[in-house]
Length: 292
Image 1 (cartoon, rainbow, N blue to C red):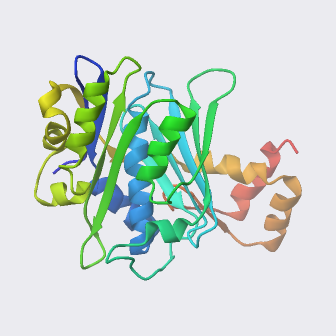
Image 2 (cartoon, rainbow, N blue to C red):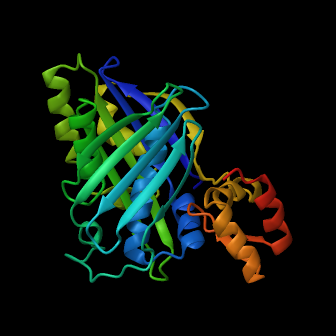
């Protein structure tokens, strides 16, 4: 199944909903970063949440960043998404290993206590920043809490990443259900009842069910209306020229020290782990363009 996001409404627009299958993009992130199973699960959940939240934005130039800073061994995660289904991200410690908890990967244990920040750059002078504590470290619950407390939008978020026996991603995906301010009490009660029919996102994906079918389970008896679908993919827009800006930012003295060492340097993009090499001659050119 190709990765894609479904957008929908229900209950005569009392509800807006998003669902996605993200197996391929989570596997691509795993390959790029060589993440351990628990790090793959954590990053995969945040990538899935991020790509759906990115699709909520209106303009082509809008960007969304989700950052988690935490006390657990994973140390933190960063995910960036645009409004067209492109997402990228990384974990601070991709090698984190923890024993399973209740037979499942212990994502909450890997994160520990911490803070979740959502930064939306929608073309205003200053980006919007919303911040909440991690309530469980399981990411879906943390995003549910973020929506309720920072954006005052009652929501239900489900996210899942299932690892195969060979430690590749077997399936990944998620959903976000949101109540509009005028949602009626009986509509909310019906959704709460319907949520009991979802065992876990990965259980449904493993059976071959699509995002549309998951939304049907959640909202089918509330007049589900699919409004659009869009492809989703792991995409990093880094290039040698863009990474060069990071080299320039270290300052003239440090660049001169690198030149004096007489060795080529290698700089890796955080988001996709691609390595870019700069020769001593290239460093000399960069130094000429360096303002400080």
